[in-house]
Amino acid sequence: MKEKRKEIKSMKNIYKWTPIILLSGVILAFALKNTYYNIILKKRGTCVKAKVFNVYRAGRKGTMNIEYEFKVNDITYTNSDMGSDEVGDTISVVYLPNDPTINRPSNILHIDCNNHK
Image: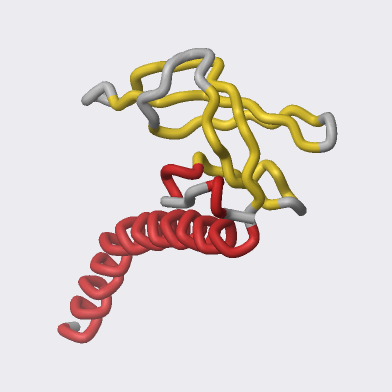
């Protein structure tokens, strides 16, 4: 009888911790993906000029975000990131030549596009 209670208690603990473990795994995977993209962009990225077309506040603290667009091979790509630029400003963006949808503003990556390939 005691063994059965221990088994039931053990199963309850598994059910209790499973969502926390899964959520932690998802957060870790997201963080690792962004870190991987940043490393690849620094090594293999190409710089291009982009135009800021929208500025907005996000989150409870009102963090300033920008939306920008740039062209590669006559295709326009858009993205958003944190920034303090104004609508109409030109910023430098680093993108992957084989997948321009993966891109970041150069200042986020600490890359000087004047001295970058």
